[in-house]
Image (cartoon, rainbow, N blue to C red):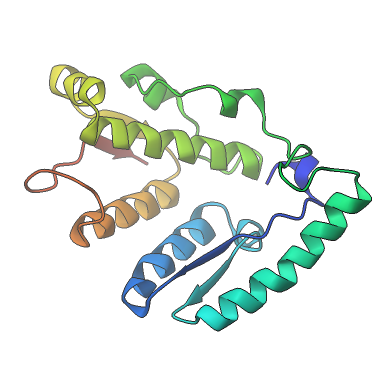
Length: 181
C-alpha cells in the first residue's frame, strides 16, 4: 500500500477449500473495515476453485513479466518493491510499544497496515511466545488504543479465530490484550 509501490505488479490471491470460506470472508471484512476498499483492491479471494486460481495467476503473471521486463528488474527477486526500514526491523511487543501504536484513520493506509501488523505480532507474542507470555503474566494484558470501530473489528476477528481453533492456544482463550476505543 505504500505510495512508492502504486504501479507494482504483485498479484495476491487468497484461496482455500470451501471449509475455509468463512475465514477468508472475515479477513476480507476486517481489511475493509480497517483499511478500506483501497486495501481490498490489492488481493483477490477465490474459494474452492483451483481452475479460477490458475487462470487468475496465469493472467497476473503476464503483468508481472511485463512490469519486470519494462523496469529491467530480475524475475527471481522483487528488487523494486519498496519496504520502509521500520518494517524491516523486528517489532518488540512490550507493553509500552503496544500502547503507543496508532490505530486511527488520521494516518496513511500503509502506516495503519504496518501498525495492524505490529498489533497482531504483539498478540501472537502474548499468546504463544515465552517472552510475551511472561510479560503478560507479569504486567497484565497489552493495552491497545485505537478508534472504536477499528478495535471492535479487531476483537471480532480475533474471537472468531479463537472459536475456529485457528489460534494455537492451550485451553480456553483468554485474551492477552485489552482493546481501548
